[in-house]
Length: 214
Ligand code: DX5
Ligand code: ZN
Image (cartoon, rainbow, N blue to C red):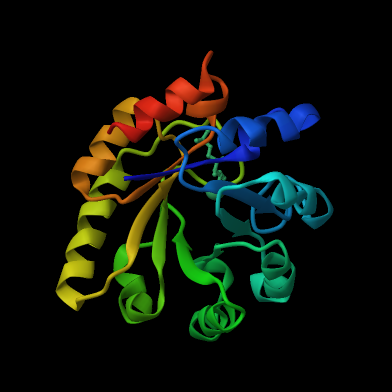
């Protein structure tokens, strides 16, 4: 499995130290949550801050845009040197076009589904995406309680991926810890995002090591 720690739960006064900690950890990617206060009821950080994060991070950036009209920022995300750009299904009426634009910009495109959005809705875009991100909580905040139905959605998506011959990865974001993570991996998830489970641990690198052993 791949682990993508979310810096939403990092110490923003010492962001550089937390990125260094991730650099020397077993984390595979760094998950970056961008919020606009419109698509979700919270605002996190924007490109002026992320430019500095990108400079220090040695891990590929897994950027999750919780914003309306994410296509307006493809260039900015590309300029960060991002590996993956995740856009929400619910924020993109012309999803197919946005996915092509992300690919044309040289990034891996991923589509994200809110807890109430059925996995069947991504069937026609599966051949075009690198990854599908299933939210395990309603997006906007770290440290929320996992919605158990997400495990069933991972199973359904795994079946849909096999049925359509797609090679898309399944990532889950929100409420991931050792218990929920084990159930998600067993159901077929490839990538887990973890914010609180990493950054509020006494030893974040050890928490990463444990999550990686799932
Ligand atoms: C929530 C964000 C998540 C968040 C996860 O809207 O998309 O990436 O950081 O945090 P935890 O792992 O604490 O639920
Ligand atoms: Zn996220």
